[in-house]
Amino acid sequence: MNKYIADWTVKENIRIHRDCSFLKLTLDDEIPEIFPGQFVQIKVEDSPATFLRRPISIHFVDREKHELWLLIQAIGDGTRKLAASKVGDRLNIIYPLGNYFSLPEDWDNPPIVTEGALNEAKPLLVGGGVGVAPLLYLGYQLAALGYKPTFLLGAKSIADLLQIAEFEKLGDIYVTTEDGSAGEKGFVTGHSVLQSEKFDFIYTCGPKPMMVAVAKYAKQNNIECEVSLENKMACGIGACLCCVEKTTYGNTCVCTSGPVFNINQLTWQI
Image (cartoon, rainbow, N blue to C red; front, side, top):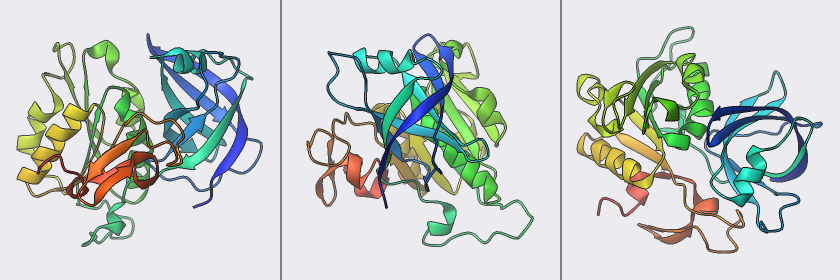
């Protein structure tokens, strides 16, 4: 798959959380093919303390408006600089990087979609914190294929839930918060929907302990599951070996072999 490097223009910067900004970027040229789960590497200009690009998940691609959406969590010098981007600023980006989520048509036994009808196969998308970022574009793609995705989103409190209104446009949404300020109190893997509903496929992204717990649930219930890892990355092209993950076929770079992995490829459950 071809990779590109280009300057994108900041069209809009919306602060949606005390530590998170929602950027809408536009490009002068045609946006190439981009898949759910891929990421970009952004150069941080005028930041003497930041030498390396920052990896950011692709939140959404709006081809009608010619936009790329990103969620930027300000947790260090580089991301704080990016989160403070102003309308009209230019961001130099390498894109699209990494692999991507498998859509139902790629499954070993893909469900049959009846044209014009809603497919009965039920995908579950589980996100925690800013890990919800790649799930919006995935949910959009699933909905476009005739599936009604279910979103299970977790956060510390109601103030930490991100982009809820956008997810509600695509499917059913369930929420957990650690303090009980929204949805059910606790972690996503304790939500009652996991006992009351049956799902055919699970996608998840967020803190590793959460993904490990989701993977365990999927294994116990014989459900196919893919995770998007958030290992620290430096180069984004497999040269620095910063993001290596142990898999069933040996150590591999998350930025090139991932960030999306089937849980059967990981050693979490062994």
